[in-house]
Amino acid sequence: MWRKAVLVALLAFAVGYLYHTNPELPECMVQLVTQSLPQSLLSTQYESSAHSLEEAISRAWESLITAPTRQWGRIAVGVNACIDVVVSGVGLLQALAVDPGSGSDHDVLHSKEDLKETFIHYMERGAAAERFFSDKEVFQRIARAASEYPGAQLYVGGNAALIGQKLASYPELVVLLCGPVGPKLHEILDEQIIVPPESLQETDEYHLILEYKAGEQWGSTRAPQANRFIFSHDVSNGEMSTLETFVASLEEFQPGLVVLSGLHMMEGMGRELWEDRLKEAVVAISDVRNEVPIHLELASMTDKDYMSSIMKEVMPIVNSIGLNEQELLFLSHAGGGPHSDLAAWDGIPDVGRVTDILLWVLEQHGRADPESEADLTRIHFHTLAYHILATVDGHWANQRAAVAAGARVASSQACGLQAVDVSKVVVKAPLSFYSSFSEPRESLVLDPSSPVTVWRRGNVSFYLSPVLVCKQPLRTVGLGDAISAEGLLYSEIASQSPSEHC
Ligand SMILES: *[C@@H]1O[C@H](CO)[C@@H](O)[C@H](O)[C@H]1NC(C)=O
Image 1 (tube, rainbow, N blue to C red):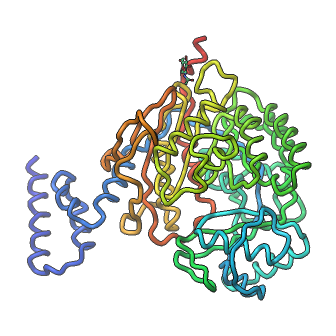
Image 2: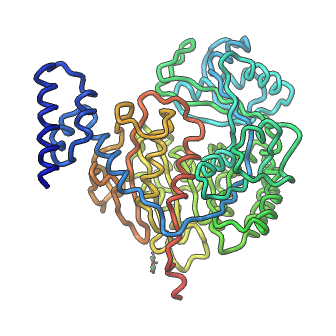
Image 3: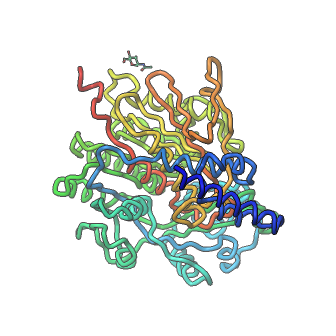
């Protein structure tokens, strides 16, 4: 005991001495010295420091994020995979000799002009979007220009491959990836990932990712926040050509969890094609052994009928979905759900509104009612400022750790770091919010020392964690995939599902 007291006195003396000799001492130096002091002594000092809120949340996450009792062991991921070429959007368009102009949205891009107009449309909103480029030859010319553009970077791309990469960073997991894997992709994939030989192909599928920074200007267009615009001419992923191979490989691989993504890629093929292919996809997904939970990662879509078909036919046969704020609102638009009168979110999505839509999805297309035939019991919602994990009671466990782990990975990865740096991030989540947009509703607060807020509505529990938003994000592509992967890794099936008692 006395040893500790002496140590504290010595350290306190040292801090006092440093202050005394140099009152202008940079804050970081003082923090360096004070890091070795007991927490209780420092609480007042931290509260007065510039990053106290971020510091408190980051610290609380560390004790909150605990591993689930049972881990998945083997995870199978499919089916979209490609090479991402990341390039400055404005730089590439200038290199393609197109002039700035006004924005206009196109569901499918047929030409460089369509590309420019759609890019501007999203850039001036600072919103993410993904489109299919229909002309193969023009696309190949643009892809060549993009990969040769100074500073262009090549990465593993496609939600399935990105989720696989994230999972493969955990050496104790065995990860199978099925998708159109070309030679370049195979070379840069984590070597721990198992790729079935049937899913290897001769050429790579390229996706072009046009990034822009917050405040970046082109002609009269100015980006309110950093984001990216994605397009490709990707037929393999567009047809989900490896879905059947994927499902067939599960028999031998015997995964504990199946993660599926790439459904959004089919939309660009046109209605006749997706209608038939989606039916086949539903049959294939239904073939996955019933005991294996399936997570579906959604992505940007534009066709309401397609979204509506996915909602009615696919969601009930998966156990979990992951999506962002645009996809959530689009689900509501497609299905006439709550707040579908809202054309777009205005800034940070209102927690009450988000909760209303999440509850509606789980009640309409999920298992909120135990009598329902649907399997969907979990939604991992992510937006820049906060994440919500919504689960039907009795089906999942470790939700607090799972939602916080997803928020933590978003907070570090956006800054290009392995761990959260509190000086580089800021809380943008509301500090108080409601459990619904309309009455009756519960008033809720964010407690930085216990930063997962929990509330219940009907048979669903909601877990909200703020994100420590990176002030100068380096790379936002694949962030949603990393969030979902991390959230799944810390999630587990509840040992006693209520249906087992029936
Ligand atoms: C919630 O579950 C109970 C049974 O546990 C069921 O009777 C009720 O209908 C469910 N509520 C909703 C909104 O589905």
